[in-house]
Image (cartoon, rainbow, N blue to C red; front, side):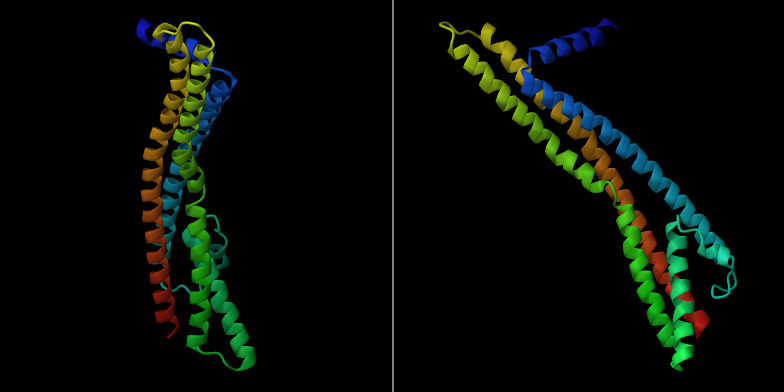
Length: 229
């Protein structure tokens, strides 16, 4: 029971032996770690919720006999990615039909082309939504070890500079400064290691959701084409 306490106390003492640069880097990495965990947990919950909402909306559409005559309530659930694609597709289809009738060029192909273009735009918008925050996590994964290394190099340089002004140097005089310098490397790894696992998990989840979104867009376009023919 006492071992974690002493380990924490020793780390705190090592932190106090760091110079200002080392302390700033260590505190900064601690802040990045908290933010990274918050982003990973929040992103994971968001993706899980979106996937559940998508499947519920898809099941709701499968229960409908036709898509072209659905009420306006199906066009308002923009927070759901599948519903956003559906609303854009239906709006584009209706708009193309109205313009085509006014010009006397209303054809099934004309409406479907506008519908497919709207689906592609909505698909790109939702992909950006899925991938939000991933760049931030990737930056932490790649940047945290380098920040830790910077603090270590700086600390070792300061330790050797302090020893160089002494007439006699020994491992006892050098060790405290070096151990303090290595604390920043440990901090960088503590931030980067969980972040890289979290990033890989979220990346895989995002790719799966994007694939499901593309499949839904394709099946939606096919169903609209069959109903309009």
